[in-house]
Figure 1 (cartoon, rainbow, N blue to C red):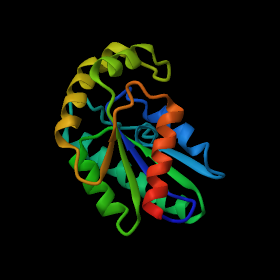
Figure 2 (figure 1 turned 45 degrees about the horizontal axis):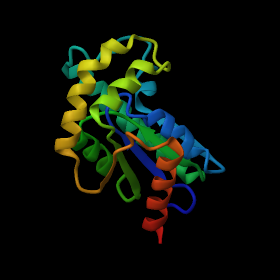
Figure 3 (figure 1 turned 90 degrees about the horizontal axis):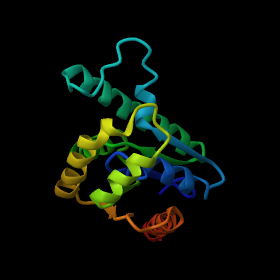
Figure 4 (figure 1 turned 90 degrees about the vertical axis):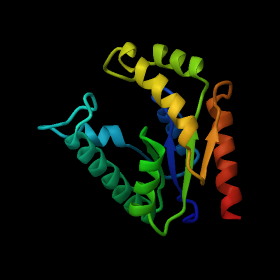
Length: 181
């Protein structure tokens, strides 16, 4: 870990609580930046490839956004910022992106895994998306099941179904502290 400026990679299914967690986690640091890979993708003003249907161009654009997020994370970490990258993607692909683009840096990798009912309830009640909650139901069912099957070594899986955001933050900060000791 780079002193008081760690890099956290927070993943999990849609509506697992990634954005809320990143914002609360970074509030614990004097300097912090939240990098949501989806936000970076949405900066594309012409030619954005949607994820449904998934195409070769969609894959290319996701890889660009993942690599760019890592580049920005390194720059901010070097300037003393704690960084939290927030992204939902299949775990082996995330692991490749991290090992390729953040090689030589410690990354605290966390996968939020609420149970499926909690995950679907959170999706139904969240207000931070510009589209209807029904759009993600099938994606949540699929990612919730698949994340449970394919979490690589080195990731901390947290079932945050019944945890408060503050409890989850404390758990992750303790994990970071134990790794830097």
